[in-house]
Length: 183
Image (tube, rainbow, N blue to C red):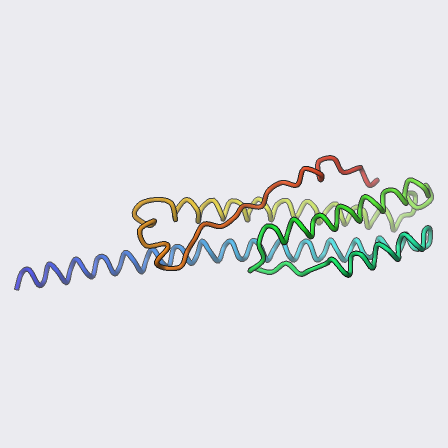
């Protein structure tokens, strides 16, 4: 009888540990999904500001603006909680390319750079970029926490069985560091 009680107690302790570990991993995984969603929101807002910026450039260079708008529309995708870091990098690449081309137009038309709406929209684009950076930091921090827990014993014993695997980090885009100033 004592052995049965001890066995039931051991099974209960193991079951409690598995359940609490699963719950902890779910929280960590959801934090990553939330962080990715936040990146999507910020990129979407940045795209909206970029589109408004392109509308202003229409008055100065119709062909370049129209080409950029079509390029953005065809290459833009929505970043969701289930997106991966490569999706984010592709979207940031589209934004960086468009900003570089807008900068070239602004260099050709100094009156565009002097336009108050252009300046306000560039400030908005910069502000959204800062928010994306913050969201990226939060995402990578959340990935670190999940990956660390998955790799550590004893969680590593059951993480795979529960369907959890390590997640990828958002890497820094080297071209962004070399981007020209938009002001």
